[in-house]
Length: 376
Image 1 (cartoon, rainbow, N blue to C red):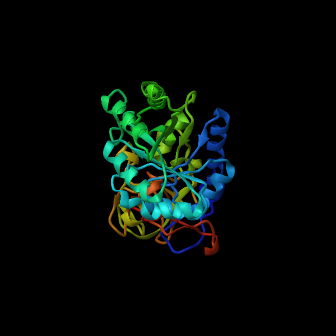
Image 2 (image 1 turned 120 degrees about the vertical axis):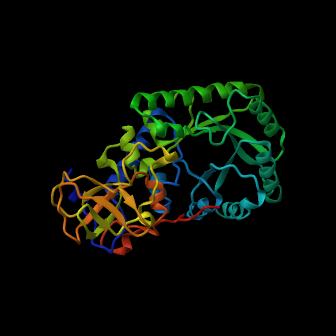
Image 3 (image 1 turned 90 degrees about the vertical axis):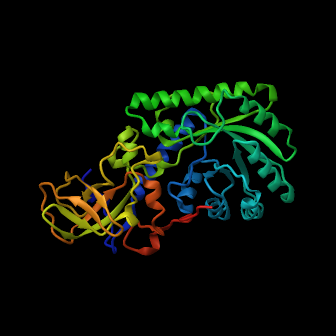
């Protein structure tokens, strides 16, 4: 598709441009996968951070949403999300006070995760004044090495038993995130990571069979979900990046350039013998090289022409300062004032740099980035 068919509006640059047609296709694609395999879809909203996009996902059939931090969850609870999984370990009870009050007000069902007895104690402490019993999932480390209990460790069984004994907690599932899939160097490697995640989760549930609890298995990450052919035994998927996609998804082979729904529109404000200088620097693009710093990409974004011209032009943002980006000219000769589309390495942190996602010339159609800067 020629790049000018993205039709970015003429607004002051830089801005984050959301192509609604591409977004809708991406949302449809994932919901169809969930429906075909009989798994529930609970998308992670940290990618788009938009209540309006979450509503589209729910309308298509998502059972609820996943959020990272309590402050990130609040706009979605206030918007009437029916259920929410907080996929970050809470170790201080006080951090849940506002979220619990708002969830009670809006009748939002909540589930929490933990990977330690300290986390279990914090959740139980938060549950007591709320007069509730919390549904909790144990986080399993399936290879990323970030958070989670090692599936073959004695800590798994001891933690499972501790949670099962706690009168304020109800152990309802096991949760994983195979984020190391973002570092895969080939589609076959990614598929193997996805297969291993599923098998590890099934084996881990079997290790806890003595608890005699119906443990739900929920797995995540857009690349591994899209690389999975067999979801047998899995109850729920939690991809997030699929809504927008980015160059990392293209590198991994789970999306095409044409499926990337988010880009940054920038303008050439100066040029010299080697570079075009654009008005989008680290404050507009981030220096992120990919999820989990997975890398494998050159520079800080792929550059395309925004307003016609050679649809085959592909340049790269090679350097960033705060307000400026450097784009090597190659064999092109673009005048000052040329507008460019920049496809991001990693869409999630780019969204967090903007108050609104622009869709057209009229600001009324912009989508608010509802959870921008929600870090606590």
